[in-house]
Length: 116
Image (cartoon, rainbow, N blue to C red; front, top):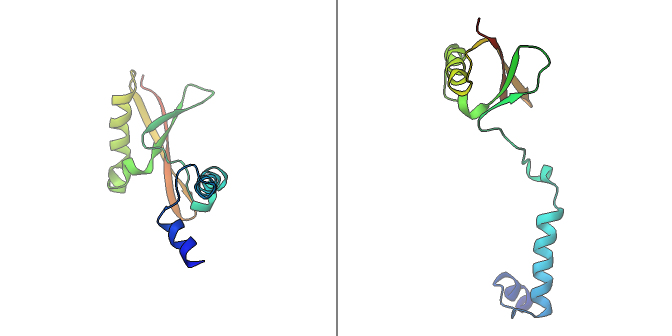
C-alpha cells in the first residue's frame, strides 16, 4: 500500500499503463467536474465595460481594482477622466454606485449622460 501511494505521489507509473491512465482520468475529472463555487472563483471585471441601457443615459461597470487605491473623495473625478478617454463623446458622470456583496465591494456602476 505504501509503495503504491509513493509511486502515485511521485508519478512513477509508465506512460500507457493502466495506473497512469487512471491518474490522468482522475485529474481530468477533477478539472472538469469540480464546481467553480467550491473555490469561490468568480469572474472579476478588470476594466471598464459599457452596460446595456434603454435611454440616453449610459451605465458602465468599473472593476474594483481600478479604484482600489484611490481615495473615495477623488473617485468620481478619476472615473470621469477614464470615461472621457474611453468614449468618443464626452460624458458627464452623475452617479457612482458601489456594488457590495458579502460586505465586499465587487465593483462600481457609473451612470453618465452625454455632455451638451
